[in-house]
Length: 363
Image (cartoon, rainbow, N blue to C red; front, top):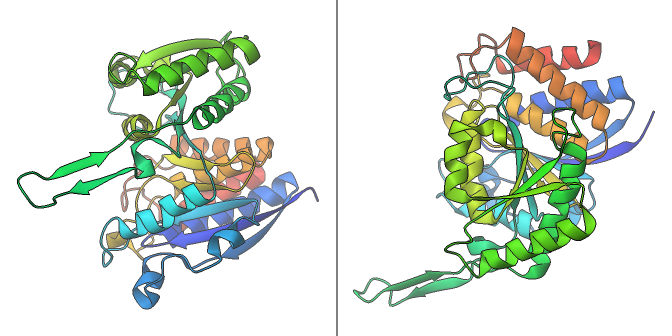
């Protein structure tokens, strides 16, 4: 037996526990197939706990989570809890406290999955967005003055330090070296492109652009560098997604373009993401929400959660296992599941998980 990994499991709300169950099923099959072991510890953080106790994260929870190799998250969002409470108190809190300063979002169209983009397929829609995850307007710098009056003022400020920018850009260059199209045999060059708005946000993106070129020229000369305005990027994501390899961008722009990317790859039901701390504990999750109306019906699509489990193993260094899981997901989308919608797959949630796990074990 190879390495052993400690995984904190946060099933969360709604259908989160159902998709996590299938992700763990596939991970266990991969551990047997590829020779590593898993030590799983489950936590009940989420809406139900909050409604019972008034507590989102108990004292010491963050420090306890730091001890794990990774976190596997289902979904957060409860119909009886006001929007924003759990998202800020749990998701954003964990991202900031665990310094998960990278949001990693592959935009990859799997075989057999429909895209709304005409005449585009898996060969064209295959790139990754690296979103800075700790700064920007999400840092909470700002406030409201004279609220409710005719003179009310609201301010929320985009703020970045060079330290935040440089560590994100260095991660992006390293990721491009190992996961760019040349690294995957799809091109003769690995390309990292900065997405920004240098013509309007002249202070913040002057910093981003300078650091991008300084770091790239000095330490990553073999990686081709490019730049795209964010509005042009949105157009090209629809018109020419094949132009992209690896994109790096700031927090707010990344939040927007990754959801656009998700719909081009077939929707939230297949999109996976990771909140990465390269030197600490990272958290992996399906991008879709908790879908509470489908809770307990065993009809929700688990493939995004399974794909996020693949990302987790890749980040932990189990590249062969990660590829085995992703290949199994692609086999299922090409040959079995033709509709990713809840209740429309032709199979139950657990049956889809069984098929992927069986493929991982036997391929």
